[in-house]
Image 1 (cartoon, rainbow, N blue to C red):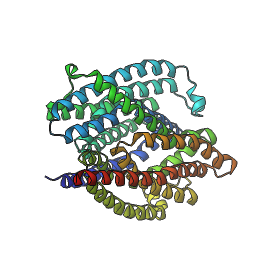
Image 2: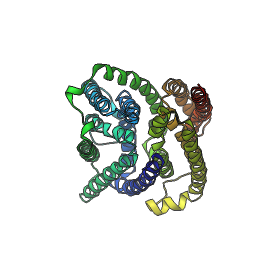
Image 3: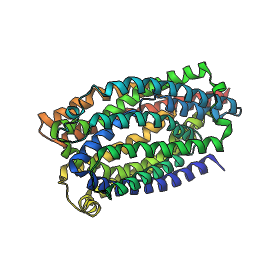
Image 4: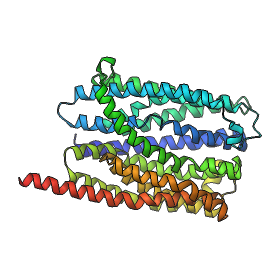
Length: 441
């Protein structure tokens, strides 16, 4: 089967799985909202934003593995190199997780979470909730390293299939909790962690049973390989931290400025537009590893052809985002059965956010696939510096409210929207000239 055929199948299956996952997540929101209530749901949405930070604590090792493993599998003699890469990645990540778990596990108990989350009216132990969530997620994101192995094998659809299982387990668990007619946030946190461990643990076993030549082994751990993964990963990590500031601080800012109830409105609106963003991301996510493989083979024309297809898909997705904005209120009324007080300014701003996000998604996949990490880090650091001040200025000084927080994020994203395409075209043109020169010689 050709490389293009594999990518097409991956895109189709991945989008189908993502669609099912999104459907389950949409069903999950009213169930957990009804179970917890508006106030506790706002707190939980903010906690989830903080938990998402944990996925960045691998110091970029996962993304480093993804690129290096893709390159190794693109070569003819890759089996031993691939096994060494996987073994070294799991070894170094396990050490990182252990250190972070000890240090941060202790530090969590010294933070006044009620004050940080502006959750003074909650009647549960937030320190206990954060300890359970943090330590459980630290363990599970070692298991999540299997995602990067699937990506390197150009089986991105399996990652979306995992999300289907995870969402399904969470939905079933919260539905069962709702039968008790309590509103126990601690129980929701425990079930969230268990669903991750169960699903990612099961798929980790699956991938290495199916690919025994890649299964990690202590005797295959190589210090030089681990050092290379750590060096490349550190660059990815810096870019990830910048992305963390850009995409996951909005809920925290809104909670502090306007209270948890406004987080519920914002995060629910974001959830709706995340549908089209996630479906589009499922289509383009195979582009990362495919670009790495094509660039390793110096097939620049194939990269350009694939990029052209993705840009045509973007036009359709942008139209879809506009249509979703128009139909937002009736769809949400059908979904939640009530109006949370969404303003048209927030809805239209979310539509623009979705369009800019999807545009950036295409170019970030190419940038990552080409391993242009230094450039990505430079752009990401600029965005990290300007994002929070812009959000505060538009939200408070300009009086735009929660829409101002989102506007600050959109304007920050515009930096990479312009810089990524320009630099990508420059790199591909330079590589194309080098290939022509080699062929002529």
